[in-house]
Length: 169
Image (cartoon, rainbow, N blue to C red; front, side):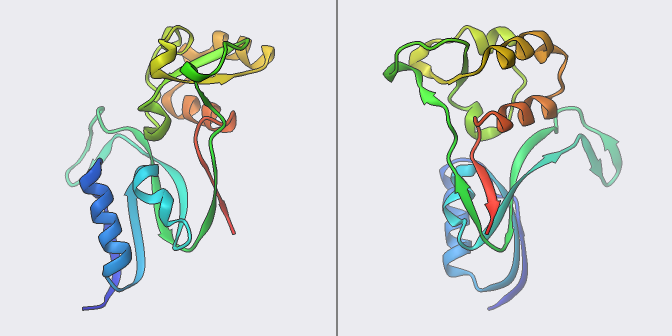
């Protein structure tokens, strides 16, 4: 069977990766839109254009506000893109540098940036991804982090290299 359009939001984790791999390799289709993580979609960048999108806190039927649904996630659709790796380093392998921001491993792939400023400044180096920023950026984040919403936090970290970037070919 050949599908005209595939719309999918597979579960996270290994099962989601397996579902995406199966769809991409074994299910013929003309067009596709997938929501997922970098792990699920990133290796399919030759067949998918990838971009970060924000899912807000509303459901449509019936229309109501659900405060727990708000996240930045990856959207893959027909096309292709280049993947630019993130610029963080693993803290347990490198000497300490000035103005370090420590980010828990899970946050680098999920786009969930709800933590307080203390979470980013005081972390175990063995369980963190580390990013060293300029004096200006360090002062900026200390001043504004707690007042930023999760979208502003995500894009600040994205612009400073914490997340992989996807550039259209």
